[in-house]
Length: 233
Image (cartoon, rainbow, N blue to C red; front, top):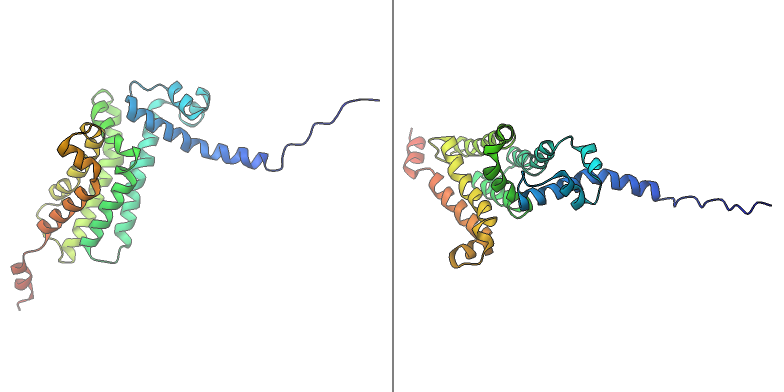
C-alpha cells in the first residue's frame, strides 16, 4: 500500500492574492523609485537599489520598465502629469468664482504634490537635467507645457468673467507658480534643517500658500474704475 499523501490544494484565495500582488507591483516600484531618486539622485540610483527597496528581483523591475530612464519618466507621469490632468478637470467642472477656484487648485496641488514625496521631483530635475537632455525635453512636454496651459485656462476664466485683470497670461502664470515651486525646493534643501525664518515656513507651508494666493488675488482684482466704465452706456 502506498504511503503517498496527496498534496493539499492551495487556499482558495491564494490565486486572487497573487493577482492583487502582481497588479500592485508597478505602483510599489514607482514608490520605491521615487523615494530613491529623491534621496540619492537619478544618476546615483541603480535598478538594483529600486529592486531591493521594492523587495523584488532586478528582472522584475525590467519586466515593467525597460530602463532607468523609462522608470523615471513613469514616476513623473504618475506624480506630476496625472496631477495636472486632475487639476484641468477641476478647472473645467468648477461652478464657483475664479478666486475660489484658484484657492482650491492651489491647496489641492500642495496636498497631492507638496506634502508628498513627489515634491522632491523638482529638485531632482534641477540637479540632474543638464546631464540628461532627453529628460529636459520629456519634462517640458509632460509637465511644463501642460502646467502652463492649465494656469492660462484658469486665469483666462477669471478674465472672461470680469474677475481678473491680466496683461500677460504666461508671466502671470509664472508669478503664481514659482513661489510654490520654491516652497517645494525649500522643503528638500534648507527647509530640512532647523533655523529661525526658514523653519517657520517649513512648519506651516499652508499658511505661506494661503498668503501667496491672497496676494495674487489682490493683484489680479480688476480696477473698480474699469468695471464702472464697462457698465456706463
